[in-house]
Length: 179
Image (cartoon, rainbow, N blue to C red; front, top):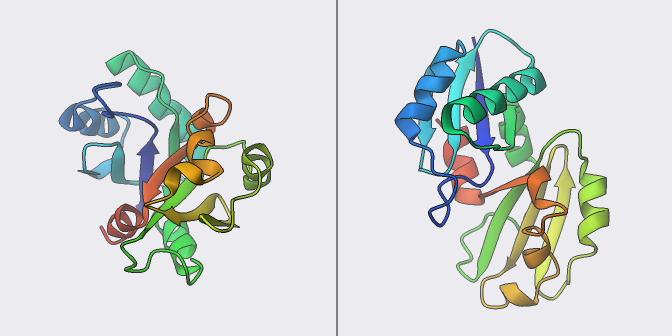
């Protein structure tokens, strides 16, 4: 069996798109996943499967979530090895202990590419934020104090792009990779 992670976009945030983690876990198990664990209450699911069809399984997850919770939730599925590879290729400025910087990892939902995301969001404001694309993810760091001055902050939440991304902090991504 191979280890995978599913990142669900936009659940249990501000009282919207409420999903119970035990019910979500049960849904994964009904789809044939084993060793299912959830992390935090924000749609991080670690699981094992024999199948290697991530995109097909992502579609089945979205259908299950719609049928079980009556919600349309974009889902990004990645193997544990792929997540580890992304984290091993983090730029030196990302994910360190600088408390003045907020470090995120943007996962891009297929079929969207990092080139399309960067084109749509535009260039980062160098004095406030940094980005680096790697595979199906974009490393993004910005000043906690000046986040509203960044180019990407409000744009990642815009309706044009938000449904094609799901974002996790550096700490969350690292914790999940270690589970």
